[in-house]
Amino acid sequence: MKAAIFGSCVSRDTAEFMPEVEVVAYVARHSVTSLQSPHGTGGIDIGGLTSAFQKRMVTSDLKGTGARRIVEKANDLDFVLIDLVDERRGFWRFPDGTTMTNSLEIESCGAAREARRVGARLVEFGTDEHFSAWKAGFEQLMAELKEVSLWERTILLDIEWAGAVDGAPHPQNDGLAKLGRSWRRLQRGAREAGRGLSNGRGVGEAWQSLRAVKPTEAEEHADRALSANADYIRYRRNAQSLTELSVVRASSDVRIARDHKWGPQPFHYRNADYESIVRSIREKVTMNGSETS
Image (cartoon, rainbow, N blue to C red; front, side):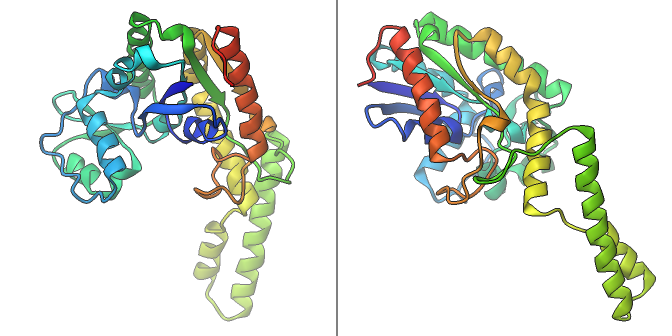
């Protein structure tokens, strides 16, 4: 079987658990906003990128060819996977209205810095401006897939960010639980400040240590997931309303894999989570008349 991906690690890592599937088109490091208003490669220096894959992805984003790369493979494809992870970093809007996804690659090669220098501004994920542009771009992506009869075989992977690592319970995110995390953080800061005063540091220094106390790993995961999942709600709802098929997992259903090959992140899950997602994908594909084995 053959598949295409418009997304990033959620779809890519899931596909690796489907040995019967060949990914023939992989569109990563793209916000769907680039489909409507691509900046183009002029004036953008990506020479600092050493990976050929990274250069291809960034160039495709700059040219707005992400959907076309999937559409041109339509006759070979059994299904398409979509996820929204690459939207999380926002996009750059240039003075002429064109856009460029704010990928890690764009930042690392210096293109983001140059964009700001020539008057571009970062449109952050979760803002009304970002959502409006994303909505228009996602609608265009769905329309292009419909034109080549791929829409019925497109599966949205609507997987929330995990708030805890494997082996840990899912954090409670009600007001009382969040207050408890803040209180424990304050207590740690107070202990650090007290130690500083005992060691002869001034009151100002001690106060700074109280204010700068860092969250624990568990607190950081819980806070990041809670914030991101809240920001994603309207995107996910809109994407679900525009797609025929979706696989949904709540944050409480998944966990962060400590030993994930790309490192522990709220969107890097356990093997068991990917295997569960794959079972759901196979059900959707079989339901639409294709065989997965």
